[in-house]
Length: 483
Image 1 (cartoon, rainbow, N blue to C red):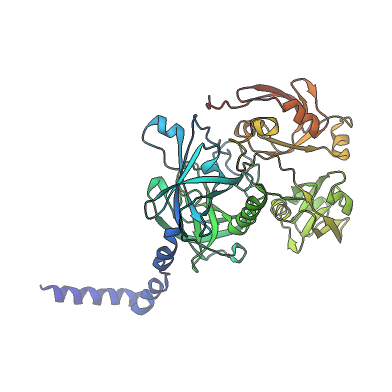
Image 2: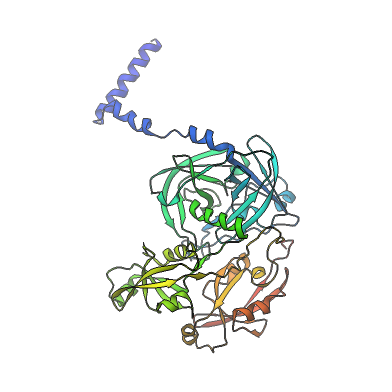
């Protein structure tokens, strides 16, 4: 039987199969024809994507992944940052980190993740034309996991177009370009799975992530996420995994958040975030039932910082925040990213439910304490003393919380953020620190003085109150060698 006859028989069988399914052959081919062609996006933007290499004089301490089968559960590994492809030799692995980045302006400014270059002694970037350039770290922001680099190429460089991450919707196509496992300019695609995804816990509470199913792995970190218009809408940052490899869930930092940080890093070398002055908790079904609410939406205020914007606006403990500056607050984790992105000094409407009545209060946003380990040009290799060495950020305790805990007016500070992996293994936001090495702590200034001389390799003893339990906790500050 000749090839022509076989081909005719195959086509007839294929048509009969479509007919049996009640669908014409033309309809079966339509979905494939409707799939987007990414070649134009890749051709235009690949030259603006770079390979980032960070080197260290001592052994680098990798970030400790959060644990749990869900946010807050310590039994399963959940979030794992990726630092780039491991180098062949153990010595090189200890001294090198690889990632991705992208050029945001023709004069050589480059965006990547902070965790790609954190504490590096030397950072270099490799362009698509194989040129390798030394990069200066203009500034970093660990809270948003953003690092701004600058290279001098001697001539204008190709740059990406910046999009609007606020316009993203679940189901839209997105594309990533990066260097997974060191394979430069690898292209992967998928769809937006969710927007406004807050990961909770201590892992970037001020960031509402873009969740996608775009395959990204070690080395993609810091690379761009594009929409179908060829615009960058996010920075690939994290994966959800219990194996360390891609499992279909990836997270990207919205480009709107990143560019807000970029402008501040350029102009003043650090990032300022807004602070309302409340500690909130999610509204669960029990709370909704007890307060006779129609739904379990909103963020219930657990405490209010004295003299803060919230305090002066009249927000009280027990209020349920359901709206902030025109945005609905459906859960407790919705509020921190919105507040953080608000420029300090801005007056914003805050909608609250109190005794079943809805009211709108006007709050002037304050400034979030900046002691979160930011690195700016000329600031050395990062924090080496005070709260930075421990990886802790503390705030004053309000009067009501002190009364609830049975503490005196000069007792305790509350942990508001944890940036160090050692501290994250033991402490959590909301813990109250009462003593440092048997020295009583009653204010933020007292805590800073008590920890001012803490050096890498030191171990300190903290007296910590969590709920109705008080325990001593020892923290060892990692040495520069990582031992």
